[in-house]
Image (cartoon, rainbow, N blue to C red):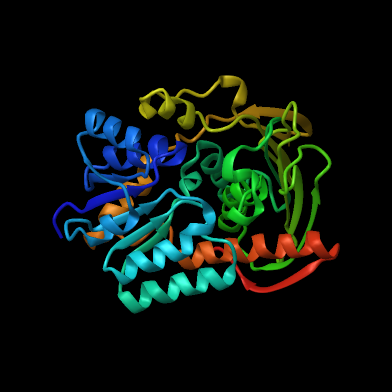
Length: 350
């Protein structure tokens, strides 16, 4: 295949600042076009990017030059649009979360196999510096046997637009939890046994949760606590881990996003105060070690998509692994609604 032509569907924050930008940086892909219903946005795109614009999704599917469709649309549109695109012969990347539920996830996977189309999900946080640092610490056994991983992502503010509406798959548990759960499933080498979640809705006047606390218990005895919030001021540490030989604290979000929004993701620079701190015992004395952060690189996601389309690499984010994320998200919603633990079987991130 020659350099695949990519169309990004949706030109809100995610479509503009994440997908169109990162596709444009990937040597193996060509940003061919953008789909947006807004006439003013189409004029701006043509002026600034010089790419094809489409007013309707179907117009992009009808264009034989389009190879790959990237869905930066509301979560409830991911499944129908992905299936429609694959049936039209296009490869597909969806933004996270994959969709709304397991039934939709299975229909999307079935369409990918039936149509023989590449299908992946934008889990760019697998290339966060913090995640990569935690992964290295665990692989090197610096904590001994880990038994507790706490992951927190929150801020204080009213959710806006469709992200404040349940029917569109809004709420931070779906939005941010999709990343945190994916990271947890990649870090813990064991199947999930059960999920317990509590949702709190006493803050903002929306129909999505304001704060969520989800506990994922794995078969090897590791508990992962996921916290997402619109009522958090200030935030807790992004990472907090306990193991038999030590603990680790990591503050701050990956700096790639702010650098990307400013127009140069390669200029990302982490505040030294946000480096991971490892607490352990050395020669019978308590010790604190500041760890250099493994450099994050979100560029890798679309570089891998290009390589996978050209049969040079295996797909890094396989949809089967993200189906597992949907299983946990769905179990968390069910647990919060029922007020009880939800058992899971056969769910793992490999």
